[in-house]
Image 1 (cartoon, protein in one colour):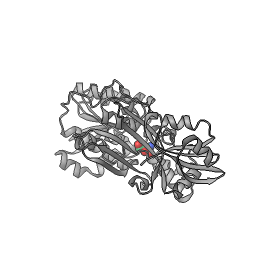
Image 2 (tube, rainbow, N blue to C red; image 1 turned 120 degrees about the vertical axis):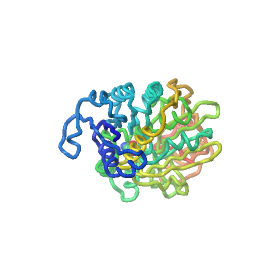
Image 3 (cartoon, rainbow, N blue to C red; image 1 turned 90 degrees about the vertical axis):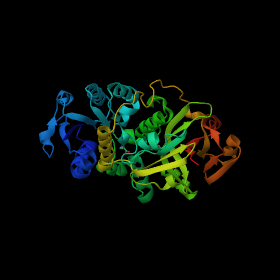
Image 4 (cartoon, rainbow, N blue to C red; image 1 turned 30 degrees about the vertical axis):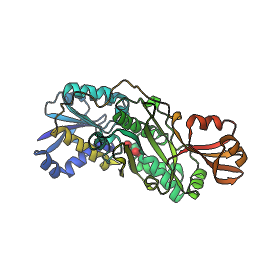
Length: 397
Ligand code: HSE
């Protein structure tokens, strides 16, 4: 019998316990032994099926030689960071869905895990149940990664879909996403693009080998997005999606950011709806590869966690080098990235043309909505300085 502990019994922690119980036979067949949750760390004891396993004292887990893997589903940094370090120091593998902790402290925790010859695995931290990080590390390992972009937050994609399809109000759609267990404990991290930003940092860390600190990455969510722009975009053959994006820059280093984008309706990502996420990885040998599936929710996220538990138990952790270094080198401001831009201005086509030269008009009725040629973020800002800008977004194509 192999014993594990779960830290936290929220949506993901409960899902992990359920997957271990519901899929016990498949898991046992693959591990050669049954897998059992021995302890669950909670702050407050609650009645329910896991009552007998609960403890509020982490040292009982830390000092229990039977527990080989700790699944951290507390979220946030403080307690999760401390317990993760203590578990790794105690020679236990740690598995997590905690994107904030991996984005902020991943390099340090990976180095500690490598020193202790144990695993620190976090497939569930990006894309929920979709395998993304393992394919980047393993199946695409022979490539030079040029770019990764995607719909990385299920809550905001759910809200956008509900608003566009049924005209739901933002707050109602958010409440539904919370009720379905998609949103973070504090949903401002979802709607302000911070959750997608943390996932973008992890993708950038893995793809480019240097820590991309979240505080350097501009993150914009959907709170300022107007339904008017959604409608103008739709009439012109585009959808608006919140994308996280990291790109290898021609002059060296990489950039990363999160923002709403216009996507042409024929692009596969334009039709990714509800809680689904999609991640596109462009390698120099493969070209673009896309991953698609449920990016949030109890069982999809738990599926990735339990698979990591099984990997930790069945593969050697002999790797000496962490997956990325903590130096934070080589980050380039995304303003240097060239794309087309969408603008809606209070003004005429003449105003738009005076600022940007050649533009493609999408709508003109007192306000003017238009697309620029490919320009840098810096040029977009400088050339629009004299305009009354009501909305501005990058175009993905
Ligand atoms: N709040 C996150 C989302 C959960 O909505 O995508 C999965 O990371």
